[in-house]
Image 1 (cartoon, rainbow over the protein chains, first blue to last red):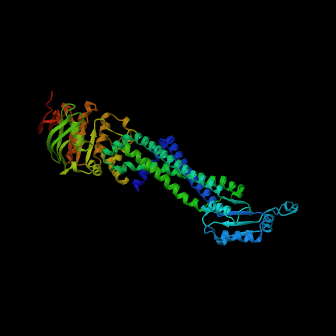
Image 2: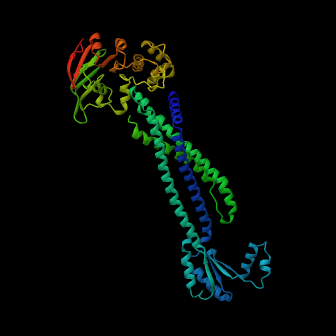
Image 3: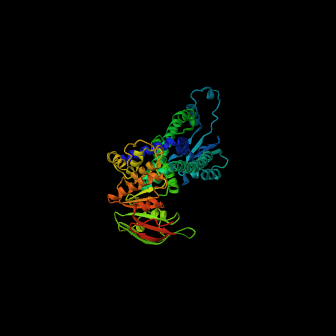
Length: 299
Length: 227
């Protein structure tokens, strides 16, 4: 109990004595952990968005010319069914009437759009889903070159180029994000270490006397370690606050105004992030003090 | 209590601080370690508290070879040896009471014990009325008494004093040595390094004389002997 009180008293008085440096260290810890939190959430949003769209990724739309006959259409369906990459249960044929009905139900507020039409301009189509989304391009090409399809379709549409771009962004975001976090973590360790060095220097006479009267090494080290860990912890709390503020004031409105992008965030991730950030703060603080103690406190 | 066997200490640059020193100091002895500056007195003391390691030879304290002592055990060695220096080494922002209490705090003694023993020991050194004074409000002699109180508070079996009268007014120096004599009288082994001829000749204790790192004289009830 005495020991604990002693360590706390020493830690707080030392923090008071070098407030400016301590504040700087806390701020840098907060920035690096805050960015860690935002990067993790950003990665999560991006990957969710990609997953949402990937349910459409495996989709190929083959728009048919109006003059395609019933027998030709059956032959086409047979060709599609014969391909091993295709999910046989999800092959769908949309007639011109189906397409128009779908269009009507998607735009119920604008009846004039179709009431003015004299004839149905929408093509009939096949909707094909591949088992592996990565095979979309290949399947689309082979269908386009198949004799049964020659001259009988308007165009074949796949969603994959958009997704590829998104995946590219996702990869880059992940790497750059975590690289920035690592660099900032190293910087914050160094800054914590500087504050501890200053604290050691400020108390060098006391330390000399402590050694003289037989204080153990850990007795001398503890106040400095707790000082570093406290700085890390304070930074962690600020980071958590920042992440929540961003989530509530920035993310929630953004999500609503960009609802068509179908972006989602796994809310449970926030509750994993809190202990991770706290632990990160403590580790940065402890490691920073450790570096300083290693270099400047020969006990 | 203390045994040195063929102890040699060579500092960087081939400087011999101590050379082939073999000496026995028994429990309860009072020893003056004399010699001109640079003769090896301070090195002698630094070796005993393991602030320096001997280049060769063995040092035994209470029959333990301190050369074989693990690093983490060094603090426990130092608790058995009180140290007093010429420059007092008091903490300026702590009161007399706090300075002495500090030595008990860092060795994990309870508040209760500290409240009880610190005033007792400060009374013993004649500063019972100055518990709340700060070091810079005291004379050199008084500061040295505080530092002796701090060295003695944990009742170490050995007390080392390196030129304890060096920064003390000559008229008060005798008082400091009398205080060390008092501490010696309760069974503490006292080793005092000094080049104060008057004091050595007045007190007539065992004298170990060093010159250029060698023991040139070891004499009971000796005198200073240098001119």
